[in-house]
Image (cartoon, rainbow, N blue to C red; front, side):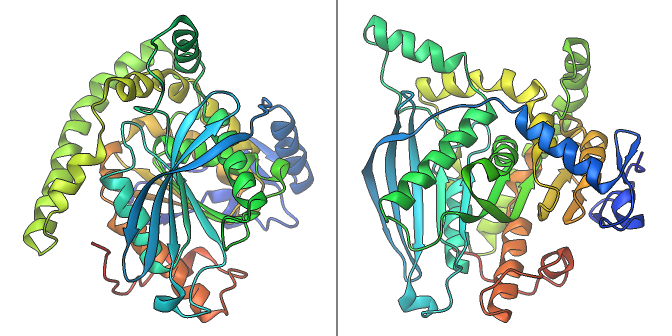
Length: 397
């Protein structure tokens, strides 16, 4: 088994990947050495075992025009799926007038919300910054206040169905259905079949499911940056209680660090950042109900199921926090021994410290710099291209 990482904040790739050549040597997985062919068979079996979920977009309408900046246009759409789900979609399209004809990424960036977050605050900052770097963004938010009120028995039944059937897999199927609809309607200026995927916490888990399902939806994910995904295995009730007693105090400290980071940014000249981040959490009762309903499927081990099913050549970052026991780092280290193009990084902090987003934005700035230096092609990009020597980039306001 690969050794546990002791040095925080360093790039770490599983021992098997460092020592073995993917093309001709065994891989380490769960304590059992697998040849590349065996690893491929296991990954394909994991894909075939994934539950199917047939869903399409029944209607997509403009919910709100979020306006324009000098670098991009922003809009908020309402997506109605044929399974009854209603989800908002934030879209950002960089402007040719700002970036030039060849300065916009040909790869769209797909993302989603961490638990208890929504369209505003932290997610809005990520979306605006990715767009300012030149990435087209499609960010599908989770169900919340736009769910119909249960004013009759049918609506009550629908609400109960969605509250009792959350899953990262269904969320990922919604993502693919949304992209299919955008492609079919000619609503985007990029190829929706070649994408980049972003995620933190819950959206890192649904992001892994999105990547696992990509081949079944004729998509290729050329890069991904997923931070603080949780529970590769179901820990059991006893361990959950034990974990809560350890993790709880660390998360409180982490919230303090997030607040200090925001205060420092406010004092450094980012006026209004504190107020903006207050909108990260939506206290609407329907939103709270939906978010609480997400807790069981996030701890049931589905994350590990989908992580094992991602293609062996999946590239990008899997970020972990040193004081986040929920992420089960050792289990993920074993799973990702089969993925030589992934860099596992561990940064100091608890789970909630992932809300300090500057380093993630800088990683994407390095990805964009690579694209600009290689005729907007991501071919040949390696972890050292986006994890070292970030350089200085102005963050979007």
